[in-house]
Amino acid sequence: MSRSGLLAVTAGLVLGLLGILPDHSLAQSTGADGQAMSGGRQSLRERWLSRDKSAGKGSVGSTSNARIDGPGDYSFTLVHDGLTRMYRVHVPPGYSPSKPTPMVLSFHGGGGNMDYQADDKYYGLVSKSDRTGYILVFPNGYSPVKSGKFATWNAGICCAGARDKNIDDVGFVREMIKNLRSQLNIDPKRIFANGMSNGALLSHRLACEMSDTFRAIASVAGSDATKTCTPTAPISILEIHAKDDDVVLFNGGAGRDTAMLGNFVSVSETVARWVRRNSCNPAPKRVLETAGAYCESYTECRGNVEVKLCVTDSGGHSWPGGRKVRTGEPGSTAISANDVMWDFFEGR
Image (cartoon, rainbow, N blue to C red):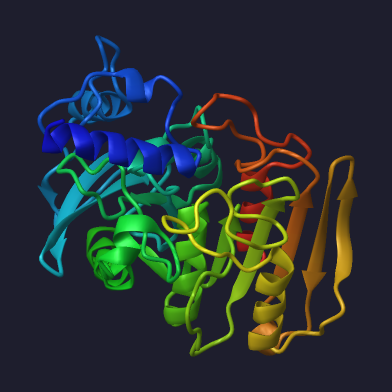
């Protein structure tokens, strides 16, 4: 087998393990860089490029210092630590360069890329941005191929290539936010992060290392995978997790693959760590109870922050209210991750 073919299969296995890869993808032919060919169907990336072109907005490869003056979808690259990194920006209708605007960075799952996270069919984040007025940014993780596919994040003990190569994802995020603040009128006191799976794990690391920047983070199907964590300020944390998650196990453990992923701590331990770090009252209050889900809140924390846990009975490794990328099946419908996290952000 050629090196490119081996790379494609290896990357495909990573995606399958992390619940990202559509079932048909390993059967597709591959190009010279290991990309799966679409067989005539327009890919997510192609749809974004077409959308950018028709809107007259920035395309992939635009320099990261280009000013953004109005609503639309934009794509940029920047060079950090010797690597060319990518991110997409969705500016909602009603954005005004004269008004400071909140911003959410949304991190994709391991083995995916920014295009998956930006696809409303799976996550509904762009529609939520349009309704709330928040600027939405989709960073791309470290990828072994030029296209940016098969990307992962270095969240500490996870995941795969980004972890193994010790990629400086925290430095990349800092540089990206610096650029974004020069491109847009961002409210520096209202910068948030959310993520799915490996992206959720990274959100926890950002809370540990960038509490000077982020007001709050929301983790979906993730946990605290950091090796050390010494936040310089209190920070609000929201964890959303299904009891039957088979990748980042609710009660902790190795999940599907120890080598590529990690031996995750439990959800309860993740929450307990943040309760201690923020010096919260260790006794939670039940703030939501509905068929198939509940939420608990830890308050009386330093800096008036909050630690919150929302648990669904089912849904597996998925985004509640969304659809699984791999199968198209819906996640839990007991709650909407987007509604819960934006209510959480609004309260900060």
